[in-house]
Length: 360
Ligand code: FAQ
Image (cartoon, rainbow, N blue to C red; front, top):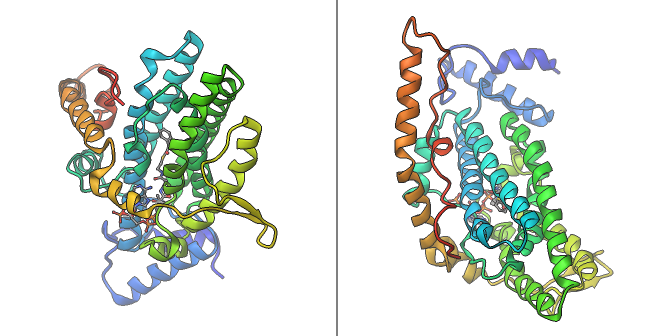
């Protein structure tokens, strides 16, 4: 078997095009073999390595959807920043929402290493050609929703994303390490918030239960369609982009949540939820996949509001991007004194769509 260094050399021959095109069939085969061997040996594929076009396209699709989810995901929670019940809760929530912006930026940067810029990805988001997670199309009706998002939505995100720390593509895997640490902290703050409400007045307890009732099923949908309807899972798992199927991760999430709900003193809204001794896992009720498909088609409760807000934030940030680009150009001229600041690309220079009047 080739050593890692030899494989690395084989994978990074100069002169290969962005699409991995090389001159001869023999060379093509050699690059493809080196790529396959690296994936089989659990090595990381790095930006300058040869990779199949479809592997690159799959990564861009998934990373872009993930990045879009992080920045659109700021909106439902930001809705409560001005109405948080104490200074402590407000400071925590602001820090969390800022973390989500940071996650979006790491992920757009990871997509850039594949040759796809933020402007292009944001254009696809704004024009509806790329998706973001279905979960962020639901409204945050009460303060308890902030807790339910932390506990359930961040909890589902961690369950899905911890295995992505072992994704075969290096920049994505490395971005996920920090993201997962922060998401784990977010999950705990949501749990702690819900616990305070659950042990509070009867009204507060009822508010917490109502939030869990509304967020439970959409959280299960975050893991994507059932395995037999998942278009990309088999290939993504073969490439070790995904390490587990959608249904496996959904099951893991249910099994984690059941004892946590008991500790919280809250119930999960599923009469079919019970321990299955034989499987060593919980059985749970049928997910409403019609609702999931409708949300993906743009017909969820908040789809229109979320995308309108995002486009508006992007447009309102145009002057910042222009000014920063002009500044960078000025300082990059020969003889200019100060080192050139990097020209911000779209996502880092616009507001995030989280400001403005409380909505949902
Ligand atoms: N919503 O064949 P599959 C977060 C699409 S971050 C919308 O199974 P795949 C942090 C899928 O893209 C949450 N679309 O696809 C946070 C594909 O459509 P396409 C986001 C969905 O890629 C917390 C089609 O359906 N996390 O929460 C959804 O193998 C709080 C067929 O599906 C990630 O993105 C959905 N739920 O598996 C932020 C993690 N499910 O692309 C703020 C990374 C599926 O062909 C506040 N992503 N689709 O047009 C993944 O692990 C995968 O992409 C899956 C889908 C598991 C989401």
